[in-house]
Image 1 (spheres, helix red, strand yellow):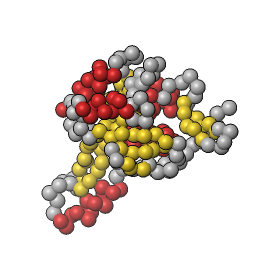
Image 2 (cartoon, helix red, strand yellow):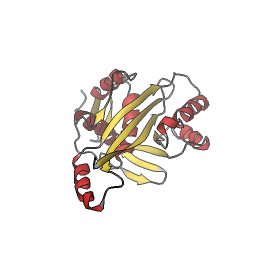
Image 3 (cartoon, rainbow, N blue to C red):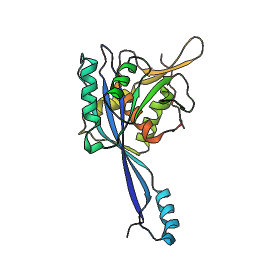
Length: 222
């Protein structure tokens, strides 16, 4: 008899595009060990110890770019259909509502998408801060969480999923840039996209929340 079972939950990340950027959605499954249900109380300490020794795994299940030029009402309907599929029941959705995403965020809420959380991107490199309706979080924390989870093998992907190759390319192209005032910005190289990374980062953030940065790989752009 196994003393450990696995709790499965789904988290979606949505990065809303502008005129020249795609709206992108990523879905990540979290697989978390826990003591099996129905165990005799005498076995619970051992089961808890076994579960604590096993890592939580994340698996990228879906990655999609919506067509360029799609009107926001059509985007919202496409996203609503995806996020309400029975296969990802009770999915928690994290969407960047910093700028242009605020309108689609409100439209998705009116369309009946449940468990919807707003991400407001800040320039901070500290821990995320929970605010009414969502989170304030730095881009460095978001991107580094994806890098850390992939490098440690806790975030699994498959080349069968569309755009995974581009996702890896985007991750490699993120750079820290220092302004004359000394502040840091963390973005893709000029002329490069970052929508795939950010969509995955929102989903990973949701699955790990709150998960402050443990390592910041800062590389200054020339």
